[in-house]
Image (cartoon, rainbow, N blue to C red):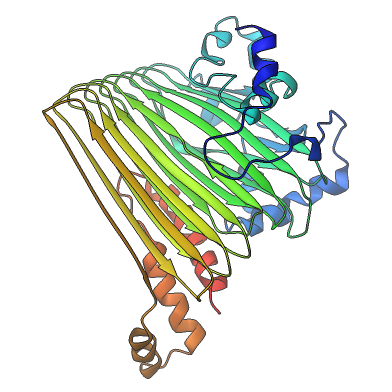
Length: 402
C-alpha cells in the first residue's frame, strides 16, 4: 500500500459516529512533565481500578512518554515480551509480520492518521506457545495534554496453546483536555489459545475517542472481552471485529454509561468463518442526561454449523437521553443458528419504593438497581479480573444516581 493511498484516506470519514476535524488536534513527541506523570494515580482512581494498579503495571504510557515498563519475573519465566510497539518492530525481526495485517491503514481518517503520524506508539505483547500467563498483565494509556492527538498502535500475539489475561485502562484527569485518543489494536489468538481482554475507559466531556480493533482467533482458540465506559465524552465510536476460525469461540461484553451531551456509538462484530465457531455479544447501556447511545451488534456466519447470539439491554434515566439498539444477524450457511434479543426501559418507581421501604435512601436504591443492571457476570474471565470489573461497576453505580 502506497503512502499516497493512506494520505487520501485522511479525508475518509468513518461510516459510524460523528465526523471530526482532525485539524483540532496536534501530535507531539515532547517528554511528559513529571507533574503530569503524577496525575496518573488520579486517573487510575477515576477508572475505578485504583492507583495500586500503577505499581503493578507492565506498561504505562502518559501522552507520548512511556514512563513505566516492567518485565517482571512473572513474565520473564514464561518468555513473554512486553515492549513499546516501535521498539518491538525495531528489535524483533518477526514483529513486523503482525503489524497492519488485520487493520487496513486506509480504513478511515483516524487509522490513516495513526499510520502516518503515530510513530508506532503503543504496546506490543507476545506470549510464546503453551505459556499460560494467568496473572493479569496491566497496560495503562493516559492523556494529560490539551488539544493533543494520542495515536496508538497496539499488537498482542498469543501463540498456539498459550493464555493471556490483559487489562487496559485509558483515561484523562477529571478536567477538560479537549484531546483525541485513537487506539489501533491488532490481536492474534493462536490455535487452542485464549485471550481475555478487559478495557476500562474514563474520559472527559470534550474528548474524542476512536478505538479500532480487529482480533483473529485461530482453530480452537478463544477470545473474551469486557469493555466498560462510564464517563462523559464529546463522542466515542468503536466497532471491534472478531474473526473466528474453525471451532473458535468469542464472548464480547460491553457496559456503556452515557452522560452529558455525549455521543456513544459502540458496537461489536463477530464473523463466524469456520465450522463449529460460536460467538456471543452482550451489552448493557445506561442513558443519562441528554446523551445518545447507539448500541451496534453484528454477527455474520459464512460457515456451518456455527452459533451466534446477541443480547442488548438499555436503561434510560430522565427524558432527554436516547438509546438506539441496532442488532444485525446474517448468514450464508443453512447450518448456522443466530439469535438476538433487545430491550429498552426505565427504572421502575415501584422497585425504588420497595427498596426504600426496606430502609434504603432513594439514591441508595437507585445505586442498587443500576449496579444489578450493569453487572454482566462473565464466568470465562478469571476471578482476579472479575474482581476488577466488579470494583469498577460498584464505582459507576455509586456515581450514576440522581
